Image (cartoon, rainbow, N blue to C red; front, side, top):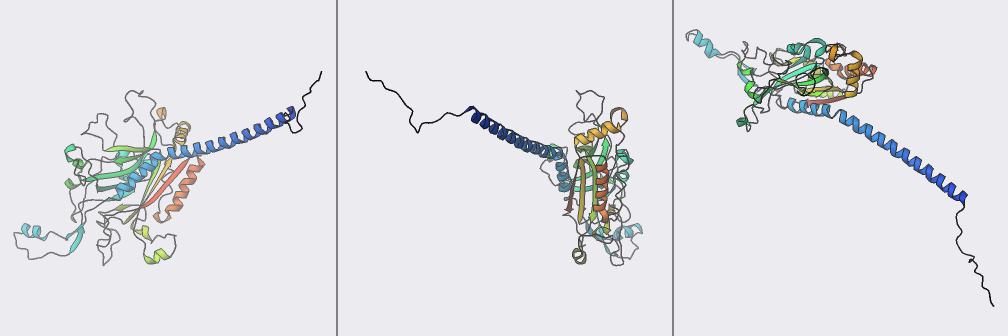
Length: 379
């Protein structure tokens, strides 16, 4: 009887040993750990970047609003006789034989900027109004009457400034009334066209506005608002620390070729201390007796300094500014200290950044030079 024995071919597969399996698992584990670390770092970087963008999204939107509306500022400047000789003749029973004297620039409107603590008397003053304020007229077409919605070129007053205030007047009614949240906020003075009082103000002898058409800017919001009775000052964005407005002219050819370093006699000379009022005669000469009167500045540099909510909340807790703290601004008057010379604006911004860095504040500086399309610098 034959017996058969099965033998494995010489080319057959051999099974993995336990040592080989353990080595393979160790290598795979190391690769997975490295992969997890890389993914974790990428995710952390992305989350931090996304959080930073989200934190300052509101500030970026506010900055766009300011620059867009400011670029539409107008004075509607016109040329007219220096004095109304017809009225003079009528007042003297027609005995006057004098004719018109000379032509001068005139305007019923006004562009004004300067320290917010000076221009916004209803805003609390001092440390509650850091930085600058700007007020102007622009054809924005904002009205209370819905029947006027098609009149998108109606003239509206506008103003922007930073104010330290609470959320008392725009806090939802269903939330507890205590624990007010105090923040630096960018405020917009935005009465509708129906409440534009600039044409009803008295005129000076030269025909320019002599009243204050933005006297109620900075006043507290009303809680009894309706669609046709809204507050004239409203918040645009929280955690806006500073607004800086620097009017300037176009640089001359010599100034443009001299380099980027500015001087006191350069483009900022029309507003050397950041203050500009179109109703005032500034820089008059024998050949230009009105100076900058009734002229818009050709360019305006706008700087907005924002901080994130985390930094604002930490300052609130450290300084005790909100709630029982009585709404005391955490930075006091230190924010206004650096800004005095417009031609040194970049240096002064660096001084402000140093103040913020000393407080470990996460900040962002937005800056742009806006061209005012209604400026007629050549007339």
